Image 1 (cartoon, rainbow, N blue to C red):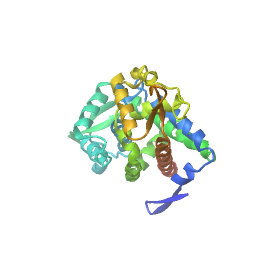
Image 2 (cartoon, rainbow, N blue to C red; image 1 turned 180 degrees about the vertical axis):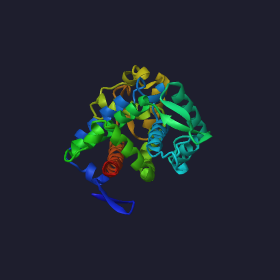
Image 3 (cartoon, rainbow, N blue to C red; image 1 turned 45 degrees about the vertical axis):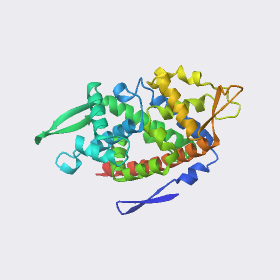
Image 4 (cartoon, helix red, strand yellow; image 1 turned 30 degrees about the vertical axis):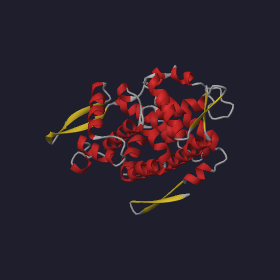
Amino acid sequence: MGYIMNAQEMIVHHTTEEILSHPRFQECREVYIDNCIDVYKIEGFPGKSSADAGRVTTLAIIVCLHARYIEDDRETWPTLKRLKETVADFGFASPRFIDDFVARLVQTEFLELRHHPADSRVRLLVPTEALLRWDREWMAAHFEPLAVLFPEPGYALAIDRSPAFQKAHGGASVPVLEGAVKVAWRNLDVVFFLAATSALSILFTLCRLGGETTESGVREADLAVLAPQFGVSRSHIRNMLLAAEQHGFLARHGDKGQFIVLTPRWIAAFDRFIADSLSYSDLTYRLGCEALMKQNQS
């Protein structure tokens, strides 16, 4: 177990090493991959766009800032400026990117811009129920793998998609967002594929097709036909596979190199990234539970 100082209290949570060495980690990993493939499909992704770290980070922070909003506390107002400042720490999205994505979210009715009641010059970012509903699905997708490892006491509030917990979790996560930044940049081998459009979804799907074994019979064409599901072109998939090969994450075999397989280097880097991400999620769950308990007692 690890410890994080928050609000002058020691928060105990499961560590990366504890998760990575758990005897059920492979089962947890399979759930993680399946859930991510589902939650990042373009048909349900907010803005009806392809997923990448810039968009996912922006969505998460919009929800978190909204959850922390107090009308008479200017420091908590979820403005576009505050969103840009917070997302900037991750290094995944430029101010122009955020402007465009926010506009797309408004256009597709996942986000509203509302004037502050006390200051009409200020416009607040307000997620619609469509975005909050997707965020609850995203939240459940990342806590279900943890429940495989640690079923008691489990993560029922997140898995049951509780709106009350969502709000408490979002507000409690803002002070520890630096931890999410560290997770990303501790896993430099994976960062490129976090930032590139649908790149992780492409590699996840390759995993699911059996592309992590030396007997892999997966061809590039098997992924190319799934391009509409990822919201990308076939040439983009080809470029992502080439990038994975250049990173040492993917190899080719067969008489003409027609089959593709993910390498042990990919597996090791990806497993550590999963464990690191789940350790941070475990921390935020505990913080969310504490925040919800305090709300219920007040």
